[in-house]
Amino acid sequence: MDAKRQVHKDQRSANVAVRVVRPVRTADTSAQRHSPHVRRSRGRGAANRDLRLDDLRAKALAGERLTIADGELLYHTPDLWGVLEVADAVRRKLHPDVAYYNINRHMNYSNVCALSCTFCEFYRKDGQAGAYTRDLDYVREETRRAVEAGATEMHVVGGLHPYLPWSYYPDLVRTMRDEAARLGSDLHIKAFTAVEIVHLAKIAKQFKASDRTAGIRWVLEQLKDAGLGSLPGGGAEVFDDRVHDEAFKGKIRSDVWLDVHRVAHELGLNTNATILYGHIEDRRERLVHMDMLRTAQDDALARLGHARDAAGAVTLTRPGADLPTPSMSARGGYFQTITPLPFVPDGSALERLPGPSGIENLRTLAIARLMLDNFPHVKAFWIMQTLKAAQLMLQCGADDLDGTVVWYDITKVEGSGTHQEVTARDLQRAIREAGFTPVERDTLYRPVTRDGTAWSVGV
Ligand code: SF4
Image (tube, rainbow, N blue to C red; front, side, top):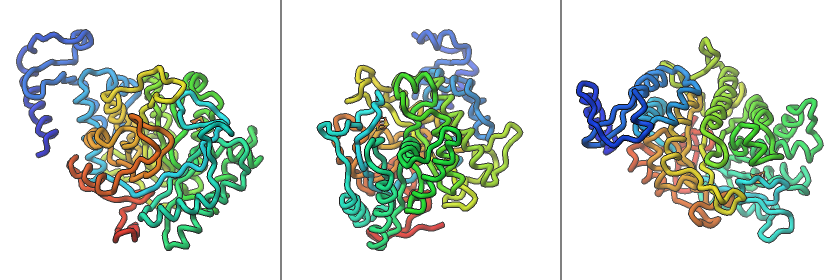
């Protein structure tokens, strides 16, 4: 029995006692004193047991969708340990023994951006010190490095460059695909957030306000033909107009972000989603964001033939539900992963804000696991969470750590530079120590069989 399970067992023992004897009077916080649902116990693993979480646990494990009010309870209860334990139970139901990682390489083709989102430390204006735009020779060289390191994935995003022509983008994808093929690799290209896709539709003069999905579809079809394999989940931030207008005005709103992912799914491309939290949004706004994502995933999974319940939901936690098949499907794609991204203030226009605490990060990741009942995977992205915290998150709802990364320019946590790399062995060790079997996956969560830098995927 691992340490955490032992503590849970001890907690349960303590809590049984609390239910039959009068609770011990302690110096409780105000919130705890005024809650009739909280029992405070002392002893090994002293805990603030919130009995309401028992009901939420039963609901979640039965595949019943949690409401926004349930999510608010999860955010406000002082029984943090209870919240993490419920998320862990759901995570183990979906992925009993394993946790995933991949061998990948990130590449940013340009940090020049027409926008100036207040939380962003990545962008530069054209001509500003530190601004860069990569040519295709650079792209070819990065691809070669990725292949020679045995990577299965290139993760590619950039700013909204005001001057690059449309032709640059399919050329970028084609260059990666052709160079990888020349070197004998089936490297997967995961590229361009929904925000970038809409920008490309505009510079290609395909975007019409009267029928915006037509331009989005045109761009995705062209990029798919060039070798695009899936979309990352960035650019979602928090789906709320107030937050949008205050923190990232000029970016697409939630309806357009969701349009891009829906069209990608219709074209058979799998995609991912994120939530960037801990800046100017409140917790309820995060929950609404999660609710909007899971509604979009209901539609994607229904398109694949998953049955809806009476309320129209498709939950993966109900008895007998199967995870969607982890492969490109002619019938359509779906959201694979939710990645909660804690806001990192350093270097951004919101530097005055503290950013979320470690406790808030744990709680938000656990709540994402519980609210997004139809997302197969929850990623603890080690770059943003740190590997040590991400390892702990494997026991609080996460089943994926992401990959070796190598080069990351979007965010620098705790003063880190652009070279941010861990080895596959580091990731395997982190997973084993957390009590799971490490499984190397490709971008579509197919298990990878590896012999050095040569690899293949199962189906
Ligand atoms: S978050 Fe994206 S769109 Fe906003 S400024 Fe940064 S690079 Fe540009």
